[in-house]
Length: 551
Image (tube, rainbow, N blue to C red; front, side):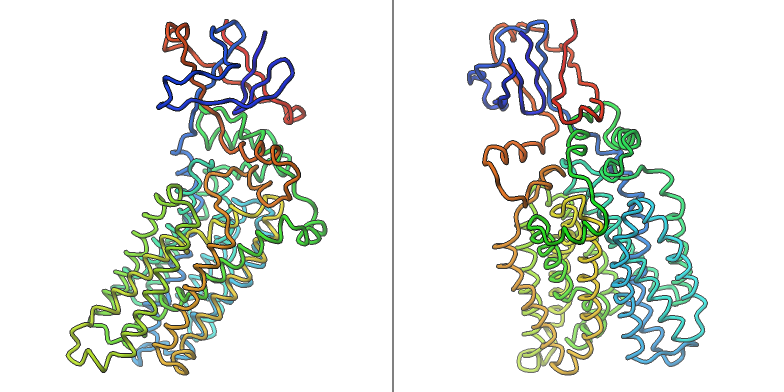
């Protein structure tokens, strides 16, 4: 009698059942009744394997090199604005003009975010390559600018490129990386972005603003070449019906020794994307409304918490809060802390999950902002000798660390975690528009808030938004750690049958280890070979893959 084992299912005499697995600590437990006591000529045991992380890491870094360049563009305003406001500068701007220059990056990102969907629909890798051209040209415009209008236009273009890059790179990593590594490698876009900010802060100590713009142009140039090296997203290729290319991409990303059969079949079973009109009408479906709302809300919270205002106007905040630390040193420390905290997030996302990190992150951010606001408000009462001048920079560091560990990276990867693949292009445009509009409002209104409410009032506003996010995430956001793309497809669908839902949600493991503890199997050769199944043809993709043994 033949028995076939596929993932966590088995097929015997035409009946489908579930494999009962034994962990390493269950060696003395009795094996499931259906597992054979002897190894017949048609029985095969499938051991658990994991895809190689090396190829996925290389593809993620190469795809996100342009994030490094966009990080330099965002960090440029922090060291450049004091230089441009210097009366001795050949191109002198006022404080209000500097505020517009920094804000136009966010306004351009709003336009770029709305264009992200059409760009992404052309291909994740192709979108990243296309925006690298105007990004390079905008740096040249800054370096050669002769008036403030050239700075306005170039920063608007920088922002438009940033809006496309943010979603295209994050979607590429979320779709190209296997679910085992999606949390850790999903931080790479944010990590590369923070590396770019740190590089810009450090270079800004020695370079003038024109030289810094040429430096940014040089950083961007590799993004024109690197897309040749890594493959397109397998999920996108399958959705486009490019099956052979998808198989090659999966093999490139997972390694030659990994069986891609299960993952390939899950991608084929995912519902394909409809046309534009159908996608717009589909936004009214319950399965997309909730994830779209949650993604937009988390992204808006990540902006209204004030992180962009804190990073751009670090000098204003430190001066107003009577910090005893040098501003240039504070900028470099800020960039280094942000980068280090993002590295920590790479290891925590798959261990603790998204919800816990979001809740803790927003709670700590809120307390640090409220604490800094209280310090500024009561400064004249208890710090006349300036003995506590270290508090502002410490509060800002805690705030940035908390953001980089939780809210920052999770708000980026969440669109690939919650939104089904067929809706991601249009959802990307909507959520990006919400995100960058929020960023523009925060960046442009910081000086107005400071003027109307003083610096402590502006910080209280940002802290209150952070604290509001704690109960919001706790009561509304589901945990998505370890769920495959097929699991994401059914996450928000109405439950028709409880057993059917359990079966679908179980598909997130690529292979499952079956350990049989019997006397006869203990006498078998421990080095017995394992035969992997061949890829089933696309027309049979909905059938179970059968596995035969070595004679």
